[in-house]
Length: 220
Length: 197
Image: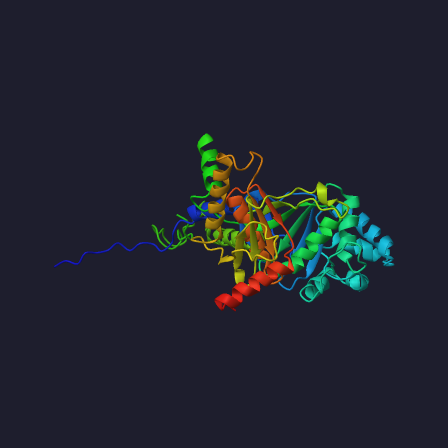
């Protein structure tokens, strides 16, 4: 019986198509995504059905980790300089010009005022390294308390930028009293409207929100 | 297609010494380019975020120390439902506002689970209020109100879950209020009665 001879195929394959796919995906990722913002601590936010996107500009972010440490940051780099000058004069921190410039280009702050000077002397790498052990911005239940340093930050930031939206990004496992302190501080400044950052979750079927969504979908 | 230039090896052989202008293939090996492409894709996948974070807007009730008692809105007990958030993601709820310290409200314990959880309790209460409105026992302006009272052992996720339930069930009026000592006592009693830790 004659053996069926299989033609020997070349192992080289055409890479053109694969190359096309790779670059197509690359283009997609470059255009559709945003760089991850630098995070002082890892925070696992709880999920909600809310679909309101986080505003792009003018946000004040208060990050709260599981241990209740608070990190403060504002996104607008232009306002940061004015903010730190304000805070400096209000709390008599005696920061140098170089320290204030470092703040203006830096990220979030998670140290009390007493350590702010030495924190701002560090390079950004060193700051990131101590970020994990940073004590967080001290906060208290009353805005008037001198220990409520978050209140000073919030106040100065809002004077510099009245449009600022306040977003709280807290870990789901953070105990409620930590968040409560922030809310009372905000309430002390008559801020009753703010945003909580959450993950997305699907609307459960058969509920009022689900029916509402179906109605909107049907109308479109 | 994208193969190495093998034209020198095979093909028709000319005699020795016969030199022919080598015809270069226009095909180039794209493998390194694919490698590079996928490397960059991996980089972008790890360093960027696709989904923008979502936020939940929250309006706290207006609070002012100078506000006189008579200026405050009085809440009818029949439209109110009080939800107490406690440890281990447990949820206690009762109808009314629990303003009478002598009569302990009928505290029920539940959780955030989808079935027989707090959601069903809210839906039930909502229907009840709608029924009272239809029968004229409540004015058209009366809305079902949920009072959320997280205690010190609850977590932030409990609060967000509860606020989310408000959105899910389309409860228009709700407020986050500090828990009172009386209600802390209710929770303790209920826990003691049920033997929960």
